[in-house]
Amino acid sequence: MKITIIGAGNMGGAIARGLAKSGTFTEDAITCTARSAATLEKLRGTNPGFNLLTDNVAAVNGADIVVLAVKPWLMQGVIEQIKFSFDPHKQIIVSVAAGISCSRLEEWLTAGMPWKGTYLPAIFRVIPNTAVEVLESMTFISAVREGIPQLQLVSHIFAKLGPVMVVPESQIAACTALASCGIAFAMRYIHASAQGGVEIGVKADDARKIVEHTLIGAAKLLLEKGAHPAAEIDKVTTPGGITIRGLNEMEHAGFTSAIIRGLKECVK
Ligand SMILES: NC(=O)c1ccc[n+]([C@@H]2O[C@H](COP(=O)([O-])OP(=O)(O)OC[C@H]3O[C@@H](n4cnc5c(N)ncnc54)[C@H](OP(=O)(O)O)[C@@H]3O)[C@@H](O)[C@H]2O)c1
Image (tube, rainbow, N blue to C red):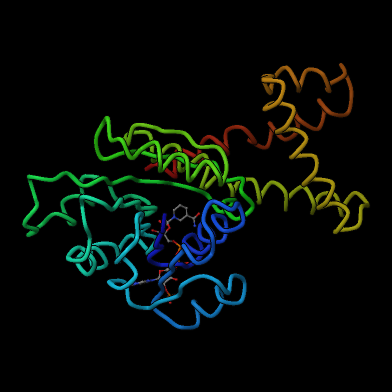
């Protein structure tokens, strides 16, 4: 099985490295493209066995799965370029672009093609987050239509890079806000806490490490015990104690409300 990643920048490159690191594909079964040789050279530095090309058409030939990871506004042009060498009988298209629906991708891919209407291509939207590189991406998958048999293969591949949820396309924007934008929100919390830690007397590096491990611990408590966050908060908030005083002070400053407002802004 061979996979081609068109646009191996931040996300495409992270997917390629994650697939190699997890052993899902050998390096020589992964082809990556970019516009510039400089981007490909960076990939050569980390994964010398990847096939690295600037020619998208050549990269699509012989691939079983074609992952489109260019910026959304470049997607139509790239599809126009590769669609004549795309074989809808054998190949699968996976787009990671935010905001481009499966039906739009299908429209671009099938326009003017002799097989349009007689053959339905297998198209998926896959939304990973940047934790794909450390095999901890929360990834969402939607298919162009129900009952596509290739869904199992696509889910199986991305499940090597972290947990996968198959969701209706109408849910993708909300899920993206929680998981892809959510990575940035979590990073801001870590940074803010570490800064606070320094102010209350902990060295910057130590403060960051403490916060990072505290977050891992909190997430594991919930994931492994199936507990509710409110129940875990009750356990650590002694009446009249310091934790509840700290938490309530954060709420007075709008903590919960700020997060909800930020998430709603992401899906506008
Ligand atoms: N970052 C995230 O958390 C995240 C999450 C989910 C989805 N996404 C989606 O991932 C996609 C890529 O985002 P990104 O942040 O990874 O952008 P990026 O770092 O700019 O990567 C895009 C890559 O596409 C390459 N490229 C541009 N035009 C090309 C062409 N005609 N043929 C081949 N390669 C081409 C660029 O090559 P050069 O480097 O040579 O210019 C670049 O390496 C976007 O559609 C975004 O919506 C991102």
